[in-house]
Amino acid sequence: MLYDLPNELLKHILGYLKSDGQSVIQLSECSSRLYSLLMKSCPPPQIWEQLVQHRWVHRNNTGDDGVIADYRLEYKRRHGLDREAIRILRRISSDLRVALQSEGDGGDDMLAEEFPGVDKKWEHPSWEALMALRLETVDILTLQATMRPGVEGFVAARALQNMNFTECLSEWKILYGVDSTTAWNSRQYSILIERFALLVCRMQHTPLTLVKWEDKLQTITSQLDSIAQDCADRISSTDSAATIVSKIETITNVLANDYGFIGNTADYYNYRNSLLDFVLKYKKGIPITLCVLYVCICRRLDLDVHLVGLSGHVILGFKHNDKEPNFVDPFQGSKILTVDDCRQIWPSFGVSWDSGFLGPLPPVRHFPVLFAQIVPTKAPTAAIMFDS
Image (cartoon, rainbow, N blue to C red; front, side, top):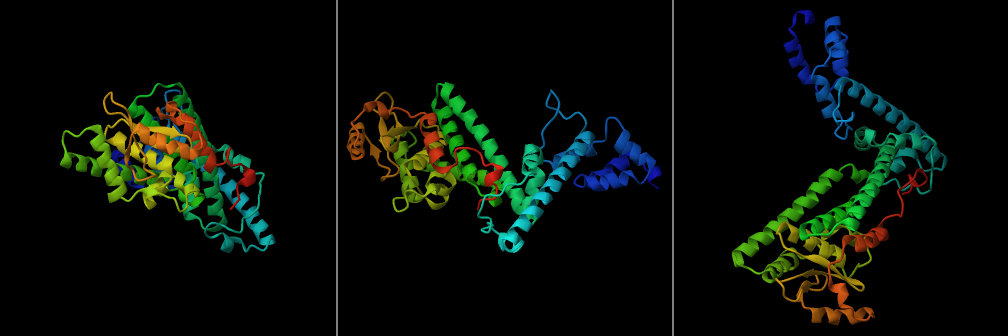
C-alpha cells in the first residue's frame, strides 16, 4: 500500500512525525521505497530539518558558513551524542547511588529535592567525558533533569549548572573586554550594566531552576519593561515638557512609593540583595542593585544616567543640560541630591572628599567586585559537583 502513495503524500504524512525521529526511522523500514526516500535521497526530505529543529533547541550549526549541510546526518550525529550522554549519566548516577546507600543516605529518597544527603566532595572518572560533550548535550540534559526523578535527574541538573558556569565565565570575559576598550555613550553603558546584572543572576540559579533560566530571563525583562512603561505613563500624564530632573523625580516616586523599592537595611549582607531578580521580587536591595534597577528603567525611557561610586556607597548620577550634576540615592529615600549633599554623605565612610568620584563609574570597575562577593573564583569542577 505504501508503494502506491505518491511521494508528496508520503512527505505530508511524515509531517505528522516531525517530533518523533524514532517513528520516522521505523517507518523507513516498512518498504525499500520509503527507505530510499528517507535514508538515501539527496537532498534528504525536509522532515529531517524539522526533526533537528524540534528536538535540539541548543543545536550547533556545522560548516564554515554556519549552515547545516545535511540534516539527516546532523540528526544521526546529535542522536548519537544524546545516547552517549545518557550512558555516562546513568553510569555516574548508579555509582553515586551506591555511594550514598553505603553511607546510609537512603538513595533516591534522600535526593528528591535539593539533595541534602550529598554533603561531601565526590568525583567520578566519567565526569570529564560528560563535560567534554559540552553544549552539544544541553537539550538531553535538560530533558533528563526535568523528567527523571532522583539521582539521575540531579546529576543531569548539576552537569547543566557546571556547563552554565563555564558559559557565564566566557560571557563575563567578553563583557569585561568590551568594557575595557570602549568609550561609552549612555545607551551602551546601560545595556552593559543590565547584561552584567543578568549574568550575575544566571550564575546564582540552583541546578533544578537553571533549566528554566530562559523563562526567568523573560520574566525579568518583562518586569523591567512594565515598570518603565508605568513610569513613562506617569511622566506623560504630569508634564509633557518635563525636564530630566522632573522625570527622574517621577521615576523615583513610582519606584519608591508605587512599587515600594527600598534598601534592605535589616538583612544587608544577604547575597540575594546583589541579584536583580531577587530585588524585583521582594522590592529590597543594596545600593548597587537598586541603582542598577534605575539604570535599566531609565534606559528604556532614553534618560542618561550612570553609576557613581562614592567611597563605600553607590548612587546614581545624571546631568541637567550643562548644569551641575544631580544624584539619586535609591537606598536612602530616593531623593534628588546635589554635590553638596554627596559631600555630606562622604564623611560617614571615613575617607577624604574627592570630587573625581562623582563621575560615571565604568561597569568594569565595580561589577567584578560585586561578582567576586557572591560567586566562586572559578568554574565548578567535578570535585565540587555534588556539594549541596
